[in-house]
Every structure is written in structure tokens, then in C-alpha cells.
Image 1: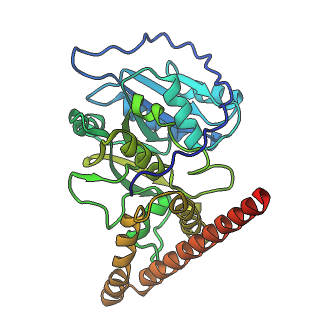
Image 2: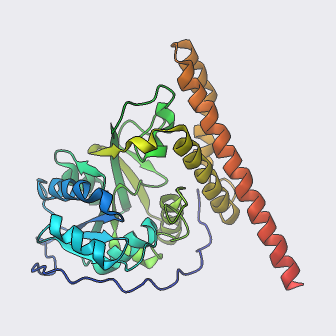
Length: 339
């Protein structure tokens, strides 16, 4: 994808409550080494134990972060409950649930480190994750990087769930690079970005990503394209930086799978409408490989998995159609209003 128009500025975020008794000072690092802050964003009390595990995995890293923030995409009541499970860690609250894109952007605003690292609240970092994730950032041309997210299923994995669609669960999938590579965009659940660049281009668009009842993605591609256009920089993938991502049982259902695929299609249609032609090249290349994936599943005696690929494709296509129809309708309404 190439440079999209910068989206309209997001409305001001609600004041973030940050009343934790954090005694840490502003981050400082050895001469020549950028400071690093890790942010874990969460939004529900159902994940308190997962947040505890995520924070503990960060604190156990060989490269200790200079800052650690838990950003609560909810009210102060939930923030207090989070503080109780991660004592001594800085916790801030959005005030209202605003979506993961808005929460991560607000968290970056509250931090002061040179680099900001995003870790999902339902994931744990494995081994020297942070050290390996930061390795590509030694190249000043690299604006950000992400690592590999391995699924830890909370129930038996369905036979129909294909490797090619593990992205619906926030996990690495078949079709991604298998070694270090330069990529169009990083993946926000396991990523690092230069904070100054991130904020200079407006962070994540709050209208994309998970928010409210919307479970589509697109925020990483949108941000990375804007950042690349503004700076000429690039993004990296480092598979040696590994997280283990918990997948709850309710997400291992046909209903969630179809909704997630449909939502992705809607979001990508919206992105395509405001981006130059060819911006969704990686998605098209991925889609062109799926017929072969169906044949491979059938040839290896896994018809249920072949069905999963077909259903996923149809759901994405339906989302694309819906997104394009909604965009065309909005443009017609705008034209009538202008006339």
C-alpha cells in the first residue's frame, strides 16, 4: 500500500485518570540507546488474570523496559481493579470505552520513552522477546517492527479453522514471512514503534480496529501507510520475537469467525476507498493463494479445513461489498448535500 490521505483528526480523548502511586522517574537510557516503554491495553475485568500474566512476562525480560504502562480502555473503577493485580505498575484509564486504537494512541501520549511497545493483554512474552523485537530498530530507517504471535487455544481447536485464517484470532498465520523481512505494516498486539513518528502522524485511527461492537481490523495498515508516506521509512517483521496469545473458547466458533472475516472486509473496503490504487496489494496476493490452500486441505484429507477457507473468503468478500456499498451511498449523499 502507498500513502493514503491523512484521516480527519480524532476527537479529543477523554482525560486519562492516572492516580497510581508509581514512583518511577522519567525513563533514561545509556548513551546512544533509545529508551523503551511497554504498554498493555485492556478493557474488561474478565482479563485481570491475563493482564497480570502479561505484565509479569514483561518484567521478566532480559531487556527490562524503562517504562511500563497498563492502559485501561474503560473507567476508573476498572483501573483500580487492575492496580490491585499489578501493584507498583503505572495504570491509566480512558474514562470510557473508546476502542483499542484510541487507547493505544492515548497511552503513547502519556509515555515519554523513545520507543513504544504494544503487547496484547491476553498474551505473554516468551524468552528474550523484547530484546529480539527491538533488534530491527537499530536501523534508523525502520519505524516499527512486530514479532510472531502463537496461539494458545482455550478449548479444542476446531477442525475447520485453517492456518491461513489464524489472523482472525490475532495470531500469526500461514502466508506471513517465515524469516526476518520488511513488511507493509506491523501487527499491533506484538509491536514496537518510534513514539515520535507514531504521534506525529496521529497514531491509530480510532474508527478502525476493535471498538464497540466492531471486531474488524485495519488500524495497523492505516497507520503504517501514513507513517511510511510521511517519512519514507519502513516496517520490519522479526519472527524470533515470540508471544503466546490466549484464544478464548468463544472465539473458536463459526459465528465469531464469520463476523471477524466480514468486519475485516468492511474495514479494508473503507481503507481502499481513501488509498491510492494498489494499496491492498498484500491482501490480493494472499487471496490469490487461497484456492491452492483449499486444494491442499482436500488433498491431505481435511475437508473441514477447506470449508473454513471457503467460508472465510466469502465472509471477507461480503464485508468488502458492504463497505463499498456504504461508501458509495455516503458519497452520493454528500454530492446531493453539496448540490
